[in-house]
Length: 119
Image (cartoon, rainbow, N blue to C red; front, top):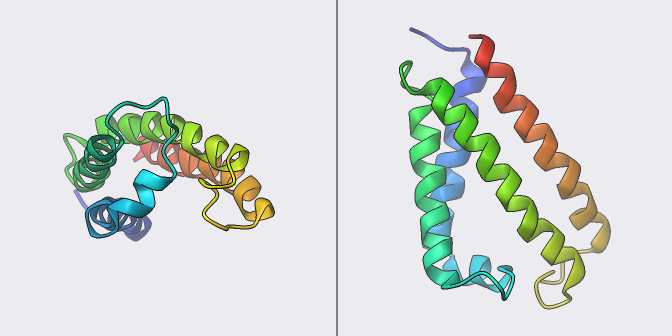
């Protein structure tokens, strides 16, 4: 089955984002809330999840499961986005208005993934 080109774009986006967890792990560890145990391992685990879910989008038998996994992952990532708003250190110098815009962006990404359930 051939999917729309923008599903492959989404797939590539998650795979690249996941790879970045291994290329720049310190950047991701810095934004993790303190109450999350073993932050470096969680960064690596979330990187693997993004890569696996991104690749699974391109496999017809796994696409829908991947979409649900991506939506769940994005909901969990909201924790980090809110933490970045509440902590100067975690904000990494990113202006507050950009951090605020990232929250509705997460919901937009969830909707984008959800939209592919129809294919």
